[in-house]
Amino acid sequence: MDEARFKIFFELTAKPLRSYILSVSRDKALSDDVFQETYVRFLQSESGPVEDAKMKSYLFAIATNILRDQWRHVSRWQIGSSDENEAATHEHHDADMGDRHSVEQALAKLTPRERSLVWLAYAEGYQHKEIAGMLHVGERSVRVLLFRAKQKLAKILDGMGIPEE
Amino acid sequence: MNNETCRFEEQVIDAIRSNDWTADLESHAASCPVCHPTLKAASAMRRLSASMAGAEYPPVNHRALWFRAQIVRRERRLSIVDLVLFLSSLGVALAGLVAIVLWNWDSLCALLGGISPASGSQLSLLIVAGGAALLWVLTEELFFSDK
Image (tube, rainbow over all chains, first blue to last red; front, top):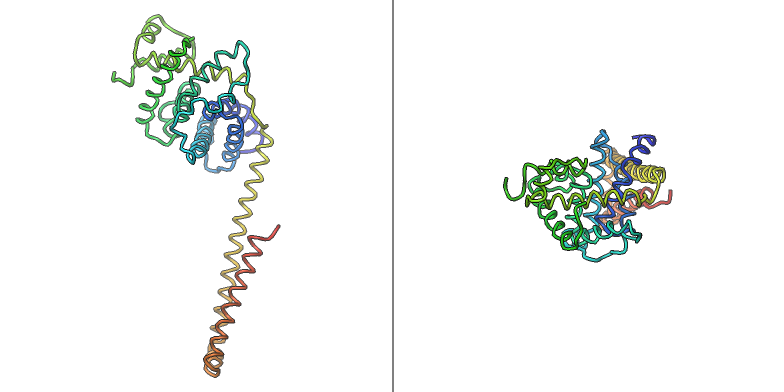
């Protein structure tokens, strides 16, 4: 990949990737590091896909791997983070950011893996098979884990009185 | 339909993306035990994603990442070149040593036979120490020198 093509790819993917990493990590400093490391690793790999759509999912897979490695040594990947770094992701307190803040609070009650699952499935719109490849689990497991994660999130959103629309 | 999937779930997700609902689908999503949580979770994620995309900016630009990746790649290539150089040098040094020993085998046997056992041990020690010093110099030069 040459620099010109990377520039276009970066412009297409930087914001969604940044949002994904920040939502899963809930730590601004960590998300900055993971963001940069993801692109550097992406540029290092010489056997990655060449189609834009596949390159994007490959990029998200790299980010997920880095996030999982970050959590693995402190065993937090499957544990809910509750209020940790709560201030990190909601620096804006305007009225129009109220909904964002509420959804972030709800999301914070999920484990990083659950956050990753619901984000990839519903914010990014990836299919179960693609998510399975990113998280290194079976497609069937993704279905079950996603089902549980969305039930849990829906229950939290209901409890917080957050409507669908 | 089992307890984890519903055949209308994909349609519900598509409707959330496009905001194109039919009355039947809307009514189904409101009451289905699979689709209702999907509707809640997916809507919340879509809203959060849209909100973050408008408010969050990447911490660096593409150029900084491109150059960082180039530096990392160059360092990696250098370390591979160093390893190849080291192994080649080691191979050449060992081959040379073996060749010298074989070339002078008769003289060496005569020399070792003509001197005392104590002197033979000293010679062996000298050869081992020389080999170790050569390896150390090569390793130091290739891996720990400031280039």
